[in-house]
Amino acid sequence: MDIVFVSPGNANGIYQNLSDTYAAVEPPTWSLLLAQSCRSIGAKVSIIDINAEKLSDSQVLEKIKNLNPKIICFVVYGQNVNSGTTNMSGAVASAKYLKENGLKLPICFVGSYVQALPVKSLKDEPCIDFACTNEGVYAIRNLIKVNDFTNLDDIKGIVWRKNGVIIMNPPEKTVPNDRMDIDLPGYAWDLLPFEKTPLDLYRAPLWHSEYDSSKRTPYAAIQTSLGCQFACNFCMINIINRNDNDEIGVAGKYSNMRYWSPDFIIKEFDKLYSLGVRTIKITDEMFLLNKKYYVPLCEMLRDRGYGKDLMMWAYSRIDTVRNPELLKLVRSAGIKWLALGIESAEKTVRLEVSKGKFEDVDIKRVISQVHEAGIEVMANYIFGLPGDTFDSMRKTLDFSKDLCTAGWNAYAAMALPGSQLYKDAINKNIQVPQTYEGFSFHGYETLPLPTETLTAAQILKFRDSAFEEYHSNPLFLEKIKSIFGENASSNIKEMLKTKLKRKITV
Image (cartoon, rainbow, N blue to C red; front, side):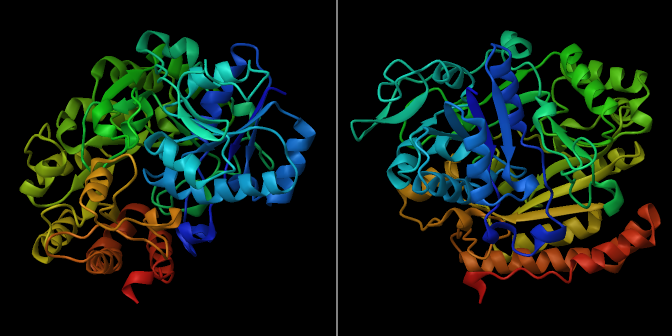
């Protein structure tokens, strides 16, 4: 065995009691992509998904011993933008256990946190032997050919220890657009664990399944593109495109999108459909952005008849979904939900964090058009963005209640490693979380950013109160009942009984 890709388990503090029933369990997208990439050049690979199988560290150790790989690679991403940081907690704990229990194999990390803070990662975590400084496709391919891991001078795109000194090698390129189908040739679905049928250990978010638990699994997530052409201050998605050696990487510097061809991607949908998977997330940050790619893919999904059976959701910006005819096509492809980043009801706050490029649109009209196409909306908001006050946050909450979308999600603004907000906080000596769990949106140790007028505790308390206020709103519950039935409404009421505990709001 050349390499084992390990998807870490969630630390207890990341989702608190939500993890038992309500948190999604997403297939490890990047483990699947990297595994298939390595297999395409003849490497022998395997995947261990600690979270899906609920493995103990001792069980992970036993599996690795049986596989006997040259390299262990922890792939540390997740279903939310902050997961690359929060999941470091479980990954580091497992890596430490492996080292402390006699495993001599080299351990590599790849993921958004080590991409953003490569030197800090190795300084803080002696269990990490080396880490990839961007997506790692070519670096990992070259690492599996190495026999002497004490000399990695020639491997671009990694940070490592040379005689105890942390060294950042020159950056490696990311997969260029014209090589996407070739060097990232799909997903190693067959390497995932399952109980009875493929992908049955994975489950969608409750809202994605129309608040019906029976529709949550089997579940898959798939990308048709990588990266984003925008540079929002709060986001760190583009850190996978990193191409420099700054000690603190900022995603906004690496804004870029790369696409698989529609003809290639439809084959992945064919595979999932043949495996019996109907509940699917399209993970792209901006699925409805480039018509050259998403229109032919949606047409193929429609023409195959998949749209009648699939229950999919995809992300888009609020200013890119204003064409009713395209929305009809999207719905015919099986996309029943669009996750839209509204962020704030205040135009000045929206424009400040989105670096312009966010067209000022009639949000109510756009939401209405999406609904008219038969698509439900998961509306996303952020409380505590630069410029936010109690009044502006209240305005955003009231606006969201007026829109009354069937899905509602809000976070307290976080200085996520890899974002401009993180680097700004460091430069201004603003307190950032001191633990990986502190970057969790739902954790006990969650520590968002303050604003000029609001403390972190005030913002977080407002966010948690807003979640309850929205989901207990009689108008919202009646809407859910009318669309999805009484059981869906009851499931939401049951969900509200799970209360999050927050260290800073006690």
